[in-house]
Image 1 (cartoon, rainbow, N blue to C red):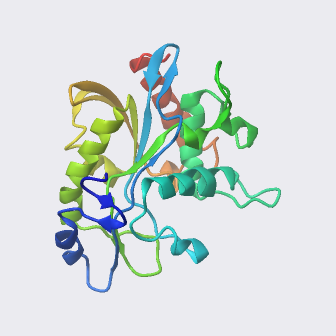
Image 2 (cartoon, one colour):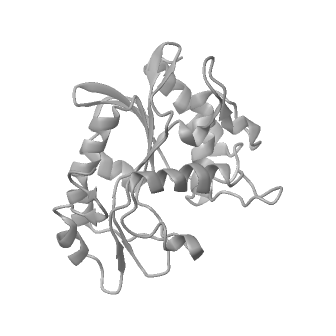
Length: 266
């Protein structure tokens, strides 16, 4: 990250200017939003490694007072605080007891992590904590990495809906590949059809298991890849509103259980 992307407050990506020039007329451009990597990311389950990476499209624009903090050139440390505290500890699945609720994206991510880390489906806050055999309990959001396929975003000013260009997707592929090489995930969750399409060049299917599950080889390592709709998608494929959504029961839960078995964590 420091050598190729964000160093001492400067965004040094060699593709920065080219990508920014391709944005649509009138769109804002936010550069250098680094990844979230939880302090407990490098986990083991049953003696086998369990490193979970969730892949989104890009970082949405923060609103209100946090916009100045989480706008551009967001370091890994800031992104960590934004995800663990801002989306995790300082919120609940639904708004309750004076705490605001999470957005559909992070509610769906909560559900996926609860399934993978074995705390069980639900909306209760206590169920969001993993209690290892050794060590202190930790929140789910401290036990995974949230990596966006694009480390910059383009879109209408004041909105959170991204409108990335094909140039941005192509150029950022090298950073996505490098990120996966560093993190060495065992399970990757792709959120959304566009993300799945853009990830295919780096995580190409080597062995197809189901419509939603395949094995890939990256840097000589096997990676189990789950490809879902985005939790905030519309209609029958939306799964970020409640843990008992039909898409969770029919697609997400069985796919993640199969992913654990494939990765040796059953």
